[in-house]
Length: 264
Image 1 (tube, rainbow, N blue to C red):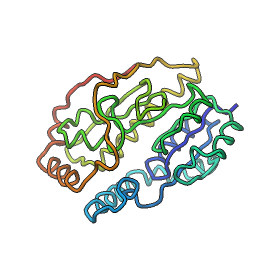
Image 2 (spheres, rainbow, N blue to C red):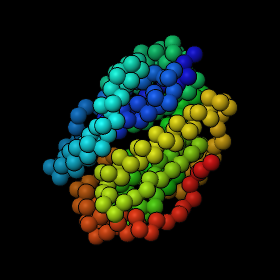
Image 3 (spheres, helix red, strand yellow):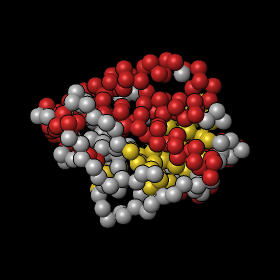
Image 4 (cartoon, one colour):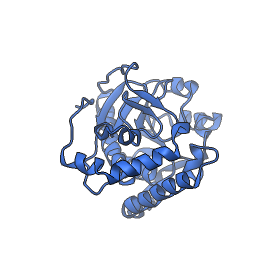
């Protein structure tokens, strides 16, 4: 039985997450799921030039943000890779057989395709997801962007939760929020949240391996909102830039607000 399987995307932020966990847990295997190089096409079938530019800028930012660490950990990552699969293949029979062969104590997910019920039921209470957002307030896709659009930067953060059949609705184990600087933008914040998420997941898995479980809290599904990939628009890009240029993030960095999140 392997201690841990990390299933994640293959972008720099995902590989940073995988490397952090591989470094913390030597008996770890990594499965990467690739959705191609054009992130915007995973959200919108025919993205506009403005939306393509938004995601290209984020891609450049995350490459720069994580470059040093990933260069240092390149050999570590390759050593722990079990499989490199295409988008959606996380739910394939081949992946299921690989997981059964490895028989991990826990499986962490970050930016994979939505895990289907048959996969979850094969490893009950072993799937633990890192959601880029604070559930239940912001669930789904782009959920560290919409708090900016809604002028609620205090709701930017990361959630570690058990997987269930819903979208980011499983019992919450631990949450955290990044520290902002006055120079941050939506892209640097996205990178900072990944660092927070890796820290949270390492704490959770250490406790899981030591105690077999972690305290968790059921979500109030009547609160918050589910955002879908198709909801992202040119207007959203424009408004994010406008609000940041007007000082939304800089002001919050000077005077952060406290909200209720799951901590221990």
